[in-house]
Length: 418
Ligand code: ASP
Ligand code: MG
Image (cartoon, rainbow, N blue to C red; front, top):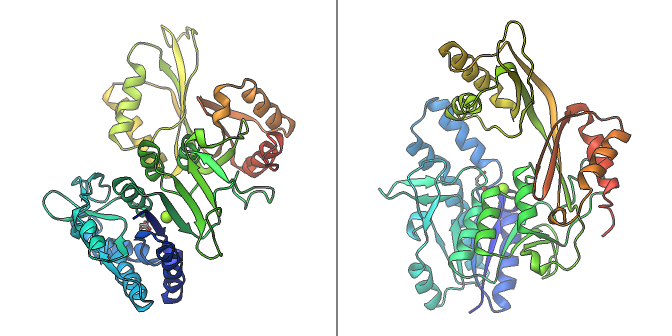
């Protein structure tokens, strides 16, 4: 039997009517001859509520109990989805992570897959069940305790099942109808993409496009799982939504296919640090130890010999998520107090945003950076930090110009037209 994985997010299973609506989509695929593995999230808002209860009960909670509690939202929707399908006459059975089993590492609240043995589900399909409804977001550690995969983790559950069961496709049903060239709330010219390459989606997801958990895209790329994002609130068919696939499957592609933006950024500059071998390690090791996610890094070239600084000195600038500024500052102050680094000033700018253009066409086209910088210059947007990768250029700018910058770049790269 051909097999499909269909994942329904929290808003798609938010109440009994919506579960029924989702179940109808599953029923339709069963009628077309598919065996289906359905992955469900918790009802929308449920996981937040559970996390809140944990934090109120125990601020420094035991991560094993956090997982036991927070994973429970998915158990409810898995059972309800299975019952709803049964009521429609579709042979279905629900599965919690440990029952499959979904074997993960023991890293509670951030577990990773180890393996998903197929035997139990295969046997049920062989017995005539048409649908396995699996609770997303959860698994089981080697010692038998329940684990969770990190927020948004049921996307990753879906892709993992698609890979393990060689699914024809993995459909992610959500509250938007696909992946857009940029956030439609920033510009009404944003266009839904029919297809996007794994690499591009991976960049967009990690740069702040919230439609998929980044790790799910990583996994899809590694195992070449064709992934589709589509709306659970619309009538959909085989061509709906956005297909995330290998670049070989994409005929026509622009140089830039997407623009991501993230307002939760901050910039930190250490002024006059010594310019010597080992200084970067001395700065970034304590940041890493403190769990700070450093993103962009710029070290100025500097040969200046100040009177009070014999030898050469430089400035080091880096960006961090805004909610990690205090942690970063503390790590730097401690390193300075311990004498492993020195600097005259630590400047923090919390009024910045990151805007990035993404496209696999950049590998073979020149002039993308020039075009980007020109478009920003024409709108008088000053660039504070630049970082590039093979298929992406990111700039840090004043946050108040973020929307303007996205709109200007969307126009400059002609993303409105297919
Ligand atoms: N319910 C979990 C969360 O809200 C997992 C998911 O929905 O992907 O993070
Ligand atoms: Mg999600």
